[in-house]
Structures are given as structure tokens and as C-alpha cells.
Image (cartoon, rainbow, N blue to C red; front, top):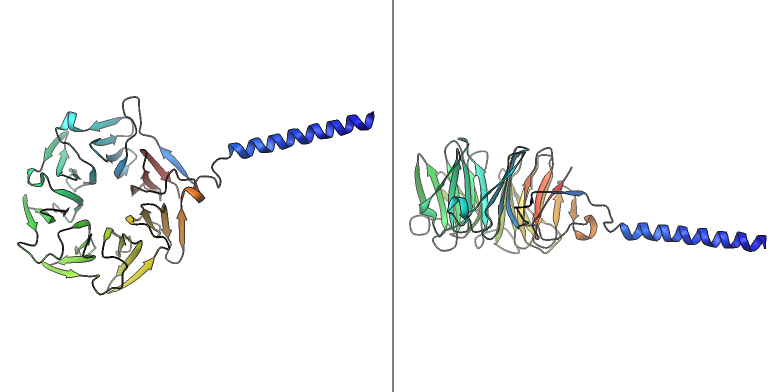
Length: 327
């Protein structure tokens, strides 16, 4: 009788332990543990929306640009503001670029226009109506440069309160299908295109940089400047070109998905956002990927990313979520 009770107790305790362990395993749905946190911007009046571009200035100035016609969201550190067709009169059809110039003026480009925002007032640049603006940068004091893709595409520059457009009818520009632009430390403009790879503009001279480089594709989605001044460009075939001084290096990420954004967050690591393979980090020697499978990302499709200060990385995925990868 005593043996039976002991046996019964043992079986009961074993059952409870097994049930407890099983319960823990079922609740641990994110394994390996996630390395990111969600950046919340939704409120009772602001629903989720797919975010297409992010500008993090500091904890009291964060701008989110949305796909479709959902407009802009702004966080001043305390409250969220929405800018869309209802209070600006602009359609903001899929925002592609948000930058601030040295005069504190905000510039916003989208797939059919360009506008700026200063001291509470919006001004649309009518010259860009119907033009697909893909990239806007500040290049020196008072100079804005704009990449345009598609019909009437090319490059536009704003200096001394005047706009100048460069296309195949008035210049030797190698391509009118511009995806991304960046200026290096010597104010040489680097341009990534969808059909001609990478070229530069220096002292009114256009130069193709990738024509003779063995590549899987001449479709480059993004280009960026690293902290050391070198230039990185990412392609539709997941290749990276690293331009440094007079040399270049072609790197294969090991995946087969397009790179739509490349970024140096200031600690020597280059980050790639891909459309289907999550995030990829390159430390100069090794590759590390962050995906649904190994980092519990909600999606392997990264819509955009931005430096969040302190080595943090902001990025957006479909479904409206904005995430922070903390270093």
C-alpha cells in the first residue's frame, strides 16, 4: 500500500513537471528570443499604416512617411501629428524621402511631387507635380538635390533659390531612371539607377562607375555614405559595391533578394535592408542576418530603415510596424 502511494505520488509529480515544461515551451513562441522592440505610434485616431521612410532627428523629432496616401506622422516627444491631404492639400502618394536642410526647413518627396515645411507652413514645389521623386539630399549650405525616376526623370538641383533640371535632352546624364543619390565628403554626387548601375557627377562631368565591374545586375536600389567617407551601393541581385578612394570591392551578401536600403549607423557596421531576406549586417569581415527564422522578425520584407542614435536601428515591415534593433 505504501509503495503504491509513493508510486502514485511520483507519477503525479512527473505529470505536473511535464505539463509545466510543456506549458513553458508553448508560450515561448519567439525562440531564439527577439532582439528588437516595437516603436509604437498608433493611437485611437492613428491606425497602423505601412511606413516607407523614417527620419530620426532626436527623441523629440521623429518623422514617419507612409505608403499610399496615408501622409506623414510627426512625434515631438510628447504627441503625434498627422499631415495628409486633409490639412495640407497634398496627396503625399507614397513618401520616398524626408530630410532637413541647414535652415531647419523640412523637405518631403513622394511619387508624384515635392514640398517643404517651415515654421508651420507647407509649400508645394509645383515644378515637381507628377514627377516621381525618389531621393532628396542636402548637399552643402542651401543646396538641395533631387533624384527623379520615370518619365521626365533625371536630376534636379536647387541653389540660390533657383531650380535646374538635368535630363537626356540637355545633358550627358547616363540615366534618367534614378533610384537614390548621395554626396561624398568632396561633394561629388553618387547616383544609383535602375538601368545603368552607379555613376557620379563632379564639376559638371558625368562618369559611369559600374559599367566595367562584373555584376549580376545594373539595377541599384540604394546608395549611401559610410562614416569613413566611402560609398556603398546595393543592387536588385543582392550585391554590394564598396567604393573607397580609387578602388572598389564587389560583395555578395549570400542571399538572392533585392537590397533596398544600406546604412552605416556609426559603429563600423553596414546594414542592408532587403525585400525578402530580412536585415543583413556586415562588419567588414563577417555577415550576420536577422530574419523571421532566427530573430523572430514579423516579416523578412524590410520597407525602410534609419539610424536611431546611440547605435540603434529603426526599420519598418509590412503591416504597419516600426521596430527598433538595439545595439
